[in-house]
Image 1 (cartoon, one colour):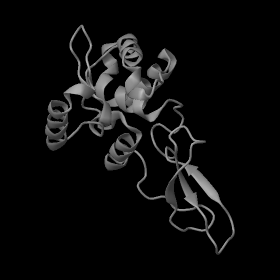
Image 2 (cartoon, helix red, strand yellow):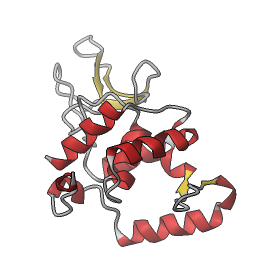
Image 3 (tube, helix red, strand yellow):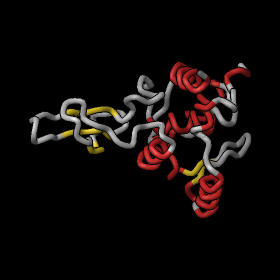
Length: 171
């Protein structure tokens, strides 16, 4: 199980926060005492705002996990990022070209490590940044997610989903 946590792996490095991001997060935690969650065992504190969809998507773009620009495969024009509740992440790349009349849509996870992972982004962020970094076991990560599901809009994920995410990062 210990081999799950290879910290020198390039894939893991992309999830690490810079020193300034760490300081900013610490500052937010200190300012937002009423919005924190505590785990009785280790008193783990999570900032709820950090897990909001817009912030998670921004993090994924900033770390180049998701493509920042997407070109339409039909017409080659730059697609726009739009809200769409029909997609798991509630965002979609969309082209509405008037030259070649078509409406192309692409998932924001396309061509990323997590293209085939079907769990909410906030949980994916939690697993990759907190659980993997802190070397939590799959079982402990599952417990943390269920104990803090209010951070994820009441959503949770299975042990199978957690195992898949850890496997992707490990490889």
